[in-house]
Each structure stands twice: as C-alpha cells, then as structure tokens.
Length: 254
Image (cartoon, rainbow, N blue to C red; front, top):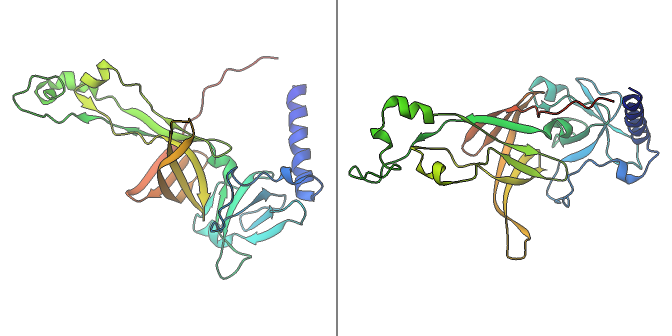
C-alpha cells in the first residue's frame, strides 16, 4: 500500500510540474521517438487540468503556458479518440481555418495497447483434382474432419512506446502447419508505428545483412473510433475493427 501511494504521488507531482512549466524539456515526452516530419501538421503535448468535453488544455512546450483548444465539434462528431486525462500524451490535428479549434484529438496513452481481431481459416486450393497430396485434397475430407481445423485465430498488433510495434498471432511454420487442409490469412508483421497528420502509419520492417531494420511496407489508417476497449480504423481496403486485449499478469503480494 505504501508503495502504491508513493507511486501515485510521484505521478501527480510530475503532472503538476509539467503543466506549470517548472521542469526540463524531457518532461514533455509527447512525440514518438522518430524525428518529426516537417510535413506532419499534428500537434503534440500533455493534457493539463481543465480539460472537458468542449475544451482541451495542452502543454506543447515546457517553456510556454498551456494552450486551450475548442473540441466541441470534435466531440460531437466522435473525433476525440480517447478521453483526455491529466498528464496523458495527446496528439491534435488543428482546424485549417481556426488554429484554436481541434478537428481530431488522440490520447496516445490509450492508443498504446494490444489491438486484436479474429480470423477464420479457409480450405487450401487444390492444385490438381487427381492429386493425393494432403494439401490439395482438403475438399475431399469429411465435414467432421474439416470442422476440427476451422479454428479461429487471434491476429492484431501491439503499439508500444518509442514507435515500437509487435505483431500478434505469429505461428512458427512446421510440418503440421504445412500439411493442414486449411490456411490462414497472411499476418501483417508490423514493427514500427507513428502518426502523420492524424493518421496511424503501421510499418513492416526487415533486417539487412548488417542487421539494420528497413521498411518493407507501410499501411496508413484513418481513425474512425477509439474507446477504452474498441478501435476502428479505415485502411485502403476498408474499415477494420479491433478489440483491446487485456494482458494477463500475476499479482505480486507485498
């Protein structure tokens, strides 16, 4: 109990100091760790005391006073992704005609989570009707056998600090997996993420011969909805919904 109270006091003190402008620049750790793209018009900062459903108080620079933005319309049209909370890192897209109005607000602390969805397998395509290969004879199997293989899997991605992303649902391929009469959709193996003009950019990476990561493919998604347990994104191929996965943890007794 004493440890919990001490931790809470530290968090509250850090937040109050940050919004009061009495700490170093490192206190306002609001942007992802990558260099800021000059074309990114997103505004980053810490949510301060005074935030409501119509007002966002944001500390953008530790050397200046907090700014106040009108988020009435953003709230009305469900363009506030995660409720602003004191001390939370926020991302804001301002109105092009009125810089005191926010068109989109994103709580980055709530965004950093494990977002998942369920996928179903499908029968493998047969290469030849005359083939007796298990891979190509799936449709000849009894329905009861096929049903055993039609097990949904959990796919998704985890968004972490420092632009780190991790795929959820990876399965190591082996002989049993290859010979299965069903196959699962290809999993997007995102390793990095960042925001750009209020959109979520998810990047798949690979390693070169020197062990350095390089981008293989990037997907950009528009935010449609984010609640404490739901995320809806619009990709080029359509809208996709995700549920927040609550990680299991062991309770440590003092």
